[in-house]
Image (cartoon, rainbow, N blue to C red; front, side, top):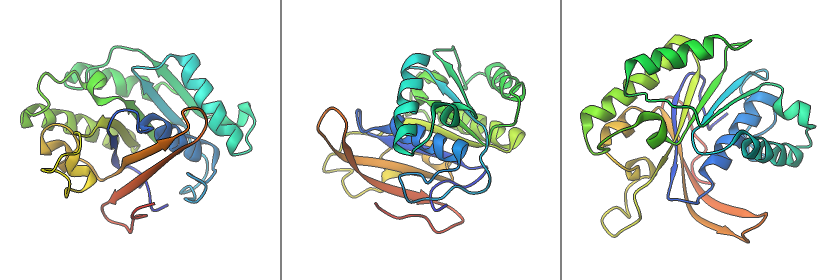
Length: 221
Protein backbone atom coordinates (compact mmCIF):
# COMPACT_ATOMS: atom_id res chain seq x y z
CA UNK A 1 0.00 0.00 0.00
CA UNK A 2 1.20 3.50 -1.02
CA UNK A 3 4.33 2.01 -2.63
CA UNK A 4 3.62 -0.48 -5.44
CA UNK A 5 0.35 -0.96 -7.31
CA UNK A 6 -0.75 -4.33 -8.66
CA UNK A 7 0.14 -4.66 -12.32
CA UNK A 8 2.45 -1.63 -12.35
CA UNK A 9 5.68 -1.03 -14.23
CA UNK A 10 7.88 0.15 -11.38
CA UNK A 11 11.42 1.52 -11.12
CA UNK A 12 13.90 1.35 -8.28
CA UNK A 13 16.71 3.76 -9.07
CA UNK A 14 19.64 5.47 -7.42
CA UNK A 15 23.35 6.00 -7.70
CA UNK A 16 25.66 2.97 -7.23
CA UNK A 17 25.70 1.37 -3.75
CA UNK A 18 22.46 2.99 -2.58
CA UNK A 19 20.80 -0.35 -1.61
CA UNK A 20 18.64 -0.69 -4.74
CA UNK A 21 18.73 -4.49 -4.78
CA UNK A 22 18.10 -4.64 -1.03
CA UNK A 23 14.96 -2.53 -1.55
CA UNK A 24 13.74 -4.84 -4.32
CA UNK A 25 14.24 -7.89 -2.10
CA UNK A 26 12.43 -6.17 0.77
CA UNK A 27 9.42 -5.60 -1.52
CA UNK A 28 9.66 -9.22 -2.69
CA UNK A 29 9.43 -10.51 0.88
CA UNK A 30 6.52 -8.17 1.64
CA UNK A 31 4.57 -9.53 -1.34
CA UNK A 32 5.59 -13.17 -0.87
CA UNK A 33 5.25 -13.46 2.92
CA UNK A 34 2.60 -10.81 3.66
CA UNK A 35 4.75 -8.63 5.94
CA UNK A 36 5.01 -4.85 5.96
CA UNK A 37 7.62 -3.44 3.60
CA UNK A 38 10.16 -1.29 5.47
CA UNK A 39 8.16 -2.04 8.60
CA UNK A 40 5.31 0.28 7.68
CA UNK A 41 3.67 -0.40 4.28
CA UNK A 42 1.21 -3.30 4.38
CA UNK A 43 0.88 -5.70 1.41
CA UNK A 44 -2.11 -5.48 -0.93
CA UNK A 45 -3.91 -8.79 -0.55
CA UNK A 46 -2.82 -12.32 0.32
CA UNK A 47 0.80 -13.53 -0.02
CA UNK A 48 1.68 -14.15 -3.67
CA UNK A 49 4.53 -15.59 -5.71
CA UNK A 50 7.46 -13.40 -6.77
CA UNK A 51 9.99 -14.07 -9.56
CA UNK A 52 13.50 -12.62 -9.32
CA UNK A 53 15.78 -12.32 -12.37
CA UNK A 54 19.10 -11.19 -10.92
CA UNK A 55 21.79 -10.71 -13.54
CA UNK A 56 24.62 -9.72 -11.19
CA UNK A 57 24.11 -11.86 -8.07
CA UNK A 58 24.66 -15.55 -7.50
CA UNK A 59 21.75 -17.60 -6.17
CA UNK A 60 23.71 -18.15 -2.95
CA UNK A 61 24.11 -14.39 -2.39
CA UNK A 62 20.47 -13.70 -3.27
CA UNK A 63 19.25 -16.30 -0.78
CA UNK A 64 21.63 -14.97 1.89
CA UNK A 65 20.22 -11.46 1.48
CA UNK A 66 16.62 -12.69 1.49
CA UNK A 67 17.16 -14.78 4.63
CA UNK A 68 18.78 -11.83 6.42
CA UNK A 69 15.78 -9.65 5.62
CA UNK A 70 13.42 -12.46 6.56
CA UNK A 71 15.02 -12.80 10.00
CA UNK A 72 14.43 -9.09 10.55
CA UNK A 73 10.73 -9.70 9.87
CA UNK A 74 10.65 -12.68 12.26
CA UNK A 75 10.26 -15.20 9.43
CA UNK A 76 11.71 -18.68 9.22
CA UNK A 77 13.77 -19.52 6.11
CA UNK A 78 10.84 -21.57 4.80
CA UNK A 79 8.42 -18.67 5.27
CA UNK A 80 10.84 -16.29 3.56
CA UNK A 81 11.58 -18.36 0.48
CA UNK A 82 8.42 -20.43 -0.05
CA UNK A 83 6.91 -18.13 -2.70
CA UNK A 84 10.09 -16.59 -4.14
CA UNK A 85 11.54 -18.01 -7.37
CA UNK A 86 15.14 -17.03 -8.12
CA UNK A 87 16.94 -17.03 -11.47
CA UNK A 88 20.48 -15.65 -11.56
CA UNK A 89 22.99 -14.74 -14.25
CA UNK A 90 20.78 -15.91 -17.11
CA UNK A 91 21.14 -14.26 -20.50
CA UNK A 92 18.17 -11.99 -21.08
CA UNK A 93 17.70 -9.21 -23.63
CA UNK A 94 14.35 -7.45 -23.40
CA UNK A 95 15.24 -5.44 -26.51
CA UNK A 96 14.79 -8.72 -28.39
CA UNK A 97 11.17 -9.84 -28.89
CA UNK A 98 12.25 -13.49 -28.80
CA UNK A 99 13.67 -13.06 -25.31
CA UNK A 100 10.50 -11.32 -24.15
CA UNK A 101 8.48 -14.35 -25.28
CA UNK A 102 11.02 -16.66 -23.59
CA UNK A 103 10.70 -14.72 -20.32
CA UNK A 104 6.90 -14.89 -20.40
CA UNK A 105 7.04 -18.64 -21.08
CA UNK A 106 9.37 -19.15 -18.12
CA UNK A 107 7.02 -17.19 -15.86
CA UNK A 108 3.99 -19.13 -17.10
CA UNK A 109 5.83 -22.35 -16.20
CA UNK A 110 5.99 -21.42 -12.51
CA UNK A 111 3.56 -23.22 -10.17
CA UNK A 112 1.62 -19.99 -9.63
CA UNK A 113 1.46 -16.72 -11.54
CA UNK A 114 3.85 -14.25 -9.89
CA UNK A 115 2.33 -11.04 -8.58
CA UNK A 116 5.70 -9.34 -9.02
CA UNK A 117 8.62 -9.84 -11.41
CA UNK A 118 11.96 -8.21 -10.49
CA UNK A 119 14.60 -7.50 -13.17
CA UNK A 120 18.01 -6.42 -11.84
CA UNK A 121 19.74 -4.44 -13.28
CA UNK A 122 18.19 -2.95 -16.42
CA UNK A 123 21.54 -2.65 -18.22
CA UNK A 124 22.07 -6.42 -17.98
CA UNK A 125 18.55 -7.56 -18.87
CA UNK A 126 17.88 -5.16 -21.75
CA UNK A 127 21.32 -5.01 -23.44
CA UNK A 128 20.79 -1.41 -24.52
CA UNK A 129 23.55 -0.10 -26.79
CA UNK A 130 22.71 3.55 -26.16
CA UNK A 131 20.61 4.47 -23.13
CA UNK A 132 20.05 7.95 -24.55
CA UNK A 133 18.37 6.53 -27.66
CA UNK A 134 14.64 7.09 -27.13
CA UNK A 135 13.76 4.39 -29.67
CA UNK A 136 15.67 1.71 -27.75
CA UNK A 137 14.13 2.79 -24.46
CA UNK A 138 10.64 2.68 -26.00
CA UNK A 139 11.29 -0.96 -26.98
CA UNK A 140 12.24 -1.75 -23.39
CA UNK A 141 9.15 0.02 -22.06
CA UNK A 142 7.02 -1.99 -24.50
CA UNK A 143 8.64 -5.20 -23.21
CA UNK A 144 7.79 -4.30 -19.61
CA UNK A 145 4.16 -3.61 -20.55
CA UNK A 146 3.92 -6.86 -22.54
CA UNK A 147 5.07 -8.88 -19.52
CA UNK A 148 2.75 -6.90 -17.25
CA UNK A 149 -0.31 -7.26 -19.48
CA UNK A 150 0.25 -10.92 -20.35
CA UNK A 151 0.76 -12.07 -16.77
CA UNK A 152 -1.09 -9.29 -14.92
CA UNK A 153 2.04 -8.96 -12.79
CA UNK A 154 3.86 -5.93 -11.48
CA UNK A 155 7.20 -5.53 -13.27
CA UNK A 156 9.94 -4.00 -11.11
CA UNK A 157 13.28 -3.07 -12.70
CA UNK A 158 16.41 -1.65 -11.11
CA UNK A 159 18.33 1.12 -12.82
CA UNK A 160 21.03 3.66 -12.11
CA UNK A 161 20.43 7.37 -11.60
CA UNK A 162 22.72 9.95 -13.08
CA UNK A 163 25.17 11.42 -10.60
CA UNK A 164 23.84 14.51 -8.86
CA UNK A 165 25.02 17.77 -10.39
CA UNK A 166 23.90 21.36 -10.35
CA UNK A 167 22.00 20.72 -13.58
CA UNK A 168 19.80 17.92 -12.27
CA UNK A 169 19.68 18.78 -8.58
CA UNK A 170 16.08 20.03 -8.77
CA UNK A 171 14.73 17.16 -10.85
CA UNK A 172 12.43 14.56 -9.32
CA UNK A 173 13.93 11.15 -8.67
CA UNK A 174 12.39 9.56 -11.75
CA UNK A 175 13.74 12.31 -13.98
CA UNK A 176 17.26 11.53 -12.77
CA UNK A 177 17.22 7.98 -14.13
CA UNK A 178 20.07 7.46 -16.54
CA UNK A 179 19.26 7.58 -20.24
CA UNK A 180 16.35 8.76 -22.37
CA UNK A 181 13.29 10.26 -20.69
CA UNK A 182 11.26 7.63 -22.59
CA UNK A 183 12.13 5.21 -19.78
CA UNK A 184 10.62 7.45 -17.11
CA UNK A 185 7.54 7.89 -19.30
CA UNK A 186 7.06 4.11 -19.30
CA UNK A 187 6.79 3.68 -15.52
CA UNK A 188 3.73 3.81 -13.28
CA UNK A 189 5.77 4.54 -10.18
CA UNK A 190 9.08 4.15 -8.49
CA UNK A 191 11.37 4.32 -5.49
CA UNK A 192 14.30 6.70 -5.91
CA UNK A 193 17.14 6.37 -3.41
CA UNK A 194 19.72 8.91 -2.31
CA UNK A 195 21.96 10.03 0.56
CA UNK A 196 22.85 6.59 1.86
CA UNK A 197 24.55 6.44 5.26
CA UNK A 198 25.99 3.14 6.47
CA UNK A 199 28.32 1.58 9.01
CA UNK A 200 29.44 -0.68 6.16
CA UNK A 201 28.19 -3.79 7.91
CA UNK A 202 24.61 -4.01 9.12
CA UNK A 203 22.93 -0.60 9.05
CA UNK A 204 21.91 1.50 6.07
CA UNK A 205 19.75 4.59 5.99
CA UNK A 206 18.49 6.20 2.78
CA UNK A 207 16.30 9.05 1.76
CA UNK A 208 13.58 7.49 -0.42
CA UNK A 209 11.33 9.44 -2.76
CA UNK A 210 8.26 7.60 -4.02
CA UNK A 211 6.40 8.19 -7.25
CA UNK A 212 2.95 6.85 -8.08
CA UNK A 213 0.27 7.25 -10.71
CA UNK A 214 -3.37 6.71 -9.91
CA UNK A 215 -3.09 6.53 -6.13
CA UNK A 216 -1.71 8.49 -3.19
CA UNK A 217 1.87 7.45 -2.67
CA UNK A 218 4.06 7.44 0.42
CA UNK A 219 5.85 10.67 -0.49
CA UNK A 220 9.32 10.81 1.04
CA UNK A 221 10.51 8.66 3.93
